[in-house]
Amino acid sequence: MQINIPRGTQDILPGEVEKWQYIEKKLKEICDKFQYNEIRTPIFEHTDLFLRSVGDTTDIVTKEMYTFEDRGNRSLTLRPEGTASVVRSFVENKMHGYASQPIKLYYLGPMFRYERPQAGRFRQFVQFGVEAIGSNDPAIDAEVIALAYTAYKSFGLSKLKVVINSLGDTESRVAHREALMAHFAPNIGEFCHDCQNRLEKNPMRILDCKKDREHPLMKTAPSILEYLNEESSRYFEKVKTYLAALNIPFEVDSNLVRGLDYYKHTAFEIMSEAEGFGAITTLCGGGRYNGLTEELGGPEAPGIGFAMSIERLLSALKVENIELPIEKTIDCYLVSLGDAAKDYTVGLLHTLRQAGLSAERDYLDRKIKGQFKAADRLHAKYVAVLGEDELKNNKINVKSLETGEQKEVELSELVAVLKDFTAY
Image 1 (cartoon, rainbow, N blue to C red):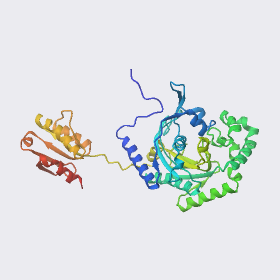
Image 2: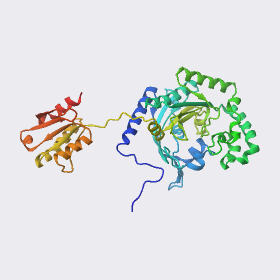
Image 3: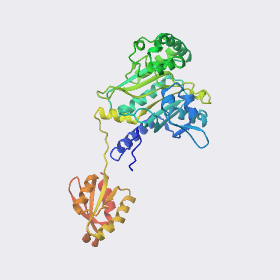
Image 4: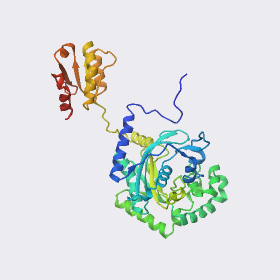
């Protein structure tokens, strides 16, 4: 009986996994420059963490979480996003007491959501994100946006659009909430079941609905920007000023609403405008979440962050026809002729690897022509050919597959010769 991979998941095979490795390495290098340190949290958490942080009116909590009970009848959930776990760790490990503030962290790992699989979206997906916790300075909002923008640009993407909005502070959101309820309530029966439920619980999330996005009332809905108090307006103006200073082009979209309940003040998305990318253009999104640490039992510690899907990044690269600069080669392939030479290459191969060289040999008893083809498939820089006569004389022939040049060297000198050749 053949067992296939679960729907909404993927195998990342050799030839493709090198792209992931390149992306991961590049993202870590960028975080080092921005002084963000890596954090690794569990793949599953107590379900209550996401109920309290993400919000019980969100699609993630109501429809998409993989939740189960363990043997102790505790409700656990595979993490659907990264921020809640990072903030939980911040509180639990008392990072607010660290000397260096704010705490700047990044994470990279699998997340899980039960949603309809489609191009670039999976039920198990890999998310990269950053969180800066402990500062109310709008400059760090601009820095977080700059880090995300820098990451996408570093891979060669050019068809990008940065969209920002302010969700205001608590006072501003209360005023906006009342205006939204008054706007949608008379015709809420024309909206989907989810939006009808959101009207009382979180009317701002109606603006984020994919089903009713073309409803006329969406276009005339009160803008949060009209309800920002003086403090929220001043904060938003600072963010825009800093983004301009960083030469990051952006647009303000008053209907931009992030799908998680914990956001306050700055919200942003980076989108792909590449032709053929698809109806869902968002590459990454994030925002400020003042109050989340207190909700999880910690002290006041305002934060801001974003998350990006590696799968979405790969899709954007494909649409823009960008090839990552990945060169998979080995230093040397050992070609043997005769049983004695073949036996000798077992130890010789290990010697090359112990000396720090990448090397391979034949394991399928191929003829010499087949061994050279195998070396070519592996993009070997050199082949070292060992026959019975060479072995008796402690010699080996080294050939460059790029130039065709070859020379005979002492077996004992092979490591030094290859190291000298591969140094250039």
